[in-house]
Amino acid sequence: MFSNHKSEAVELMRSEEEIMNLILSVATSDDRIRAVLLTGSRANPNTAKDIFQDFDITYVVTNLEPYITNHSWIDVFGERLILQMPDEMTIGEKDANAFHYLMLFSDGNRIDLTLFPLDTIESKFERDPFTIVLLDKDRLSEKFASLPVNKFLITPPTQQQFTDCCNEFWWVCTYVAKGLFRDEITYSKEMLELHVRVMFYKMIEWNIGIETGFAVSIGKGGRHIQQYLDKELYNKILSTYSDAHPENIWNALFVMTELVADVARKIAQKMSFNYNQDEEDNVIQYLKRVQTMAGKNNTS
Image (cartoon, rainbow, N blue to C red; front, side, top):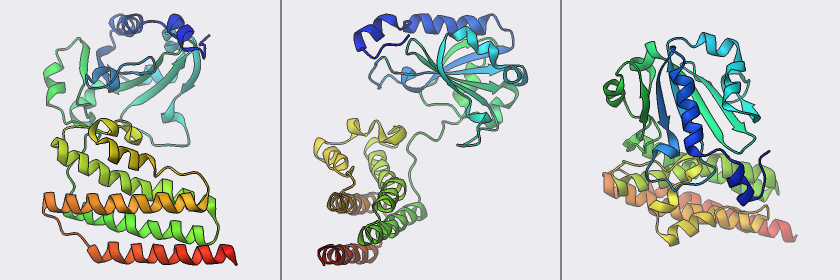
């Protein structure tokens, strides 16, 4: 079984070579699997290597149906600790064009396996920018190279997208303040993390896009932002993750407003966008007023 002790885990885990050989041997012996693609962090030369990297694999198949009517065929990949098949679940997003097996094995390795039908490649498939073709039985490599890159790369905003993001950010900030005034801490935290932060990261993402020519991805949850930001800015972003103490939530909120205000003006200048300065000024004034009211309310 997979050990929590790092040195033991490394010894027990099958090597990258073993897992890749297994993935390819399954595909080679099955005539219905026409190509194998590697995506994600293992295909990205800019990503630091560690033992927790997933094997993000796509099997391009002639027909999905045989693979999803009987799931026992995936047992060949090893003993699993847990399996998820998101396309059969009642929660989360579904992909109508593919089927996904997410497998964490007892040795600590993880394979995220996507099955994609061959006949919809040209109309439905979006490639990862670092896709590596591991197996190609039908000389599809040129076709893959011409397909559009998927949504994970930062894309330049339009004026409307920028305006909407700014407006949404300043609007949902007021919900955090309202919750703090009422001492509704869980509500305030949800507004901060699930609504304010989404717009906050979108603005940070666009800023990184401008600096990098919109040629990179910050990854899920902004996992790669540290490599694209100076230390001071990165530490400020970390400081926006507060505990449940009201004062700390206020501090996190105001750091986020300060950063968004600075970044939004920079984006507006670089991309010749209009920026609603009155919106920013009015909301910050409102937040400070509610903070003062909340402080008086808590001392009375």
